Length: 204
Image 1: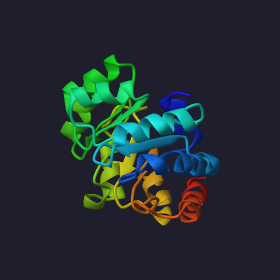
Image 2: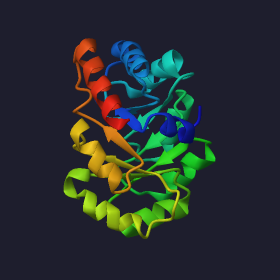
Image 3: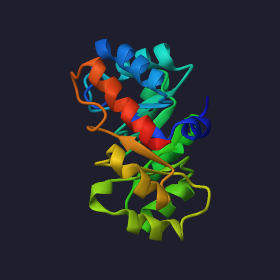
Image 4: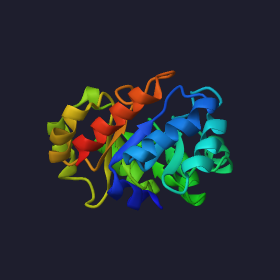
C-alpha cells in the first residue's frame, strides 16, 4: 500500500505523539482494526525510531507507517532505516522534501501560506500538511485551494475533532492529521479504540 491508496482508503493520519515502543504494536493493531491506514510517530516521542520499527513490523502490511516532526535530512535517513515510509514535517524545508523523495518515501511537509505551499509542491511533496489549523479556518483553506495545483492532497492538522471533519472537507481538505483528540500518551487501548471509531465514522 502506498500513500495515495492509503489516503484514499482512510483520510486520517494517526499522530502517536509520546508513544513508547512497548505500546506501539498494540496501538497500531487497534488503529488498523478501526480502519486507519496512515500512522505517524513524531520524532520528539520517546525512542521514536524503535516505535516506528515495531509498528512497521506489526502493521506495515496494512498501513503506511512513518515519522512526524522530521526536521533534517539525516532524520529522513534514520526513519527509512527503521522501516518508515512516511515523512511528515511541521514546516516547509526543500532539502528535507528532496531527500524524502530521493529515498522513495512519501513527503508531507507543513505549510500555512501560499508561498510555503508552492515551495513544497515545487520541491516534490507528495501531499501538503495545513498546519496549524487552529490558526486558520476552513474559509481560508477554501481560498487557498482555488490557487493550489489541482490534485495536490491537503492534510489538515491541528485541533481536529470528529465534529470538524465535514466543514474542513467541504472546504477542500483531502485528509486530517489527528493528535490529542485521538491519542494521548498512556491512554487505555479501549479509549483509543473509541476515539478511532468516532473519527472513522465521521470521515465517511
